[in-house]
Image: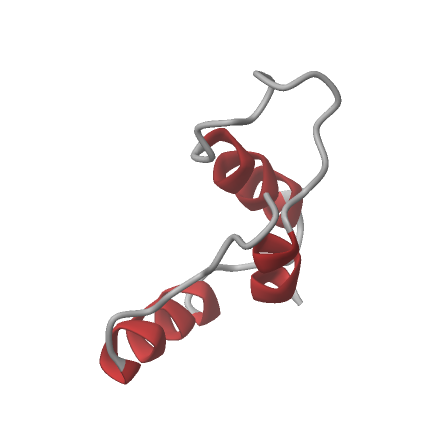
Length: 63
């Protein structure tokens, strides 16, 4: 993952992503864990290279 970039093509796309995350109810169930697992599942290299570490750009997005 060296040199991996998490690019948003426009500020509007980023605002849309933030709005969608904000609309998710994070109380009452393991929504954060479900969201995290979903995002990891979207990474093509997950599980293909042995031990998996969460890419820094995913960590920064989640924080």
